[in-house]
Amino acid sequence: MKNRTRNKFKVLPSNAFSLIEMVGVLAVIAIAALVLMPNLIKRVDTASANAEAKNLKLMADSFKLFIKRNWSIPTYTNWADAVALQIGWEKGSVLTNGRGIARAFLIDPNLNIAGSQLPYTQRVNGSTNKPVSARLMIVSSIFKPLPISSGIVASSSDFNAIWNTTDGSVPSIWSSWQGKNYGDLLKIQRINLEPMFKYVSLNRSQSGTVGFGVGTNYDLTGVDKAYLTGPTFGTYYLESTILYLYRTNGALDMRQIIESNLSLNFANNVWGGQPNVGAQITGQDFQNCADFFMMALLNSNARNGATPQAVLTALTDYMNAYTAWANTGFDKISTNYAALISAKNNLSTLTSGLIFKPEQ
Image 1 (tube, rainbow, N blue to C red):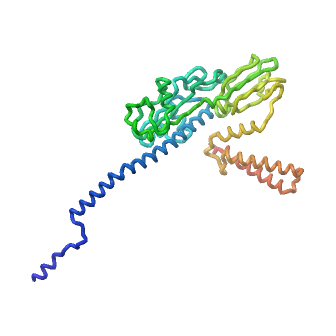
Image 2 (cartoon, rainbow, N blue to C red; image 1 turned 45 degrees about the vertical axis):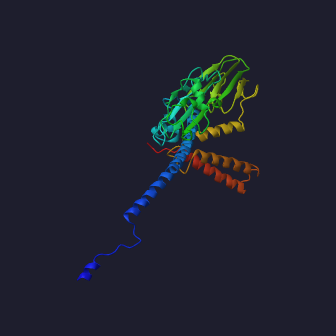
Image 3 (cartoon, rainbow, N blue to C red; image 1 turned 45 degrees about the horizontal axis):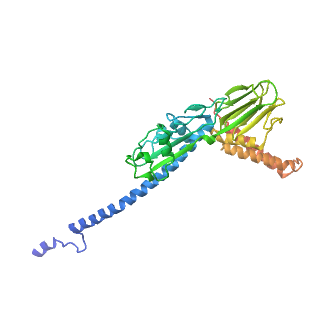
């Protein structure tokens, strides 16, 4: 009976943890965590900062694309709407970063486009004086809220202090900011708009009043028009502006997409790129049209995989096929003719698919 009672009580294996040993293991783990945690947090912060830098670059590119598509420059009150429209983000995702901290959209206080601050909406007169200090910044911190909010910076010295801050540093004017020791978690995206303005000179070598204008909306149905009564007119237009040039009878003579500084002359009742030379279509003109076509918004109802890029590629294939066929003496039995027909059919399919719209 006694032996049976003893067998009910088992002795713990010698390799089991005692309470004291368990506490010791947990203490070691805690110490290791304290040692490793700062490095882990640092790596996470660095990854977040790098991602934020890429996001700011994307936002800056999208902001410029909005300007090229709409020929207007938003101010700090609606910059996020413009960026969100181009990227396809929610407005809140533009205004705040992944850490939920507000970004700041800063404007140079000396900015002057057509005699005023932002916003700027381009009209036919453009900016007769070269835009100056057309500088903007998007600033973001993934550590502490910024000591500045969106708007026109109080002074040019403050703006320059932020603009000239090197990567990994904090502006000298933010000496009391809680994040002053974490410059690697502060990202500054600079946007210089001055290169986006191109100088256009319009000259008239014959008598008579001729008109000129610029597109005002993206579907090309609106033109802000004026008249060249003197011998010359010069102004700065935004890159990608569509310039309309008319003859003395009011008929449209040519339409030019502005991609660089440009000088045009009206003589012999036509506009041309050089004095006494009529309107001509050049490779640069085609490239301008192609660039503008590629910037166009994609039709969400497009069929057959049609996109502006696909249509442009198909058009290039068609032109190459036509050239090859022409070199055969327009032989309809040649393989080049068959390739041309195939290219034509593909171009037709894509162009019709790109403009497809379901019946209402």
